[in-house]
Amino acid sequence: MASRNPAFSRGFGNAGPGQQQAAWGNTSQYGAPTQYGAPAPQQDAYTAPSPYGTTEDTRYMTMDDVVTKTGLTFLVTVLSAAATWAMPGQAAWGLAIPAVLAAFVLGLVIAFKQIANPVATLAYGALYGVALGAISEAFALEFGSGIIMQALIGTFGVFAGMLVVYKTGAIRVTPKLTRWVLAAGIGVLVLIVVNFVVALIGGGDGLGLRSGGPLAIGFSLLVIGVAAFFLLLDFDMADEAIRRGAPAKFAWYIAFGLLVTVIWLYIEILRLLSYLQND
Image (tube, rainbow, N blue to C red; front, top):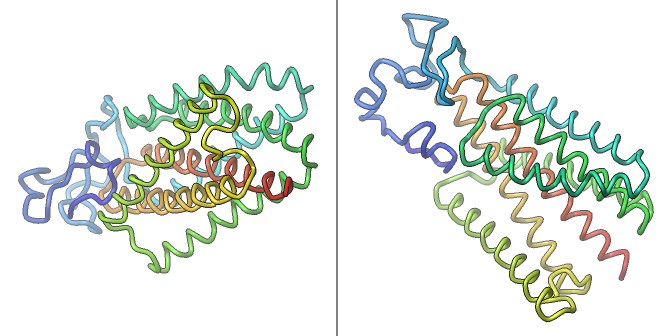
């Protein structure tokens, strides 16, 4: 069964059903069974090489692990944001700028090295919480505190809606869909960078993607749609990791991925609401 998610290109490999014995031996590098759904008969607990560079006693990841660790990560982010919101504006922004830079670097390290570690994931959540607190406070001062609640409701509404879509199978995560979503994400990123560079060089609103006009509203809707589909990839990553017998600690990497997508979604919904209020 080939992996449908690029996050597993290194961590899990792409051995087909007829290749599992050759690729894994009796169990996978994670201690996974040779056939999904049946635990390895010779042992319940084992010592297996960790995919993250250590050897340790481990167990299979479950959905409870994903829910628990994701909930804890979100809680740390929210508490960090609330603490930053309570600070004076200048102090909040003084912390937010270095926090964003540190979170960006840490996020790249976690993503590319596939680090599944509670310290790394919770540190990322705390750092980005500082930034979110300052950003939310700025929007609240400009447009009223109601915009924050609207953005939160919109964010978790999209999250819940995409979870229902995924669980019911209304949209299935296939290799083709994954490629399209990743291509769309790269396209959005390129447009944002180009818009920023044009605005920096020529002044004004660049391409108009963040000007607050009809084009900006349409672009925000596009970005929200792409972010929503990235949630499907995150849900599929969690399911596939469980099927493949990933260690329980891998749930921290799942939590990191979900947090990145939800933060992206929240900020873009906040932007969209600000554009609509300006109109």
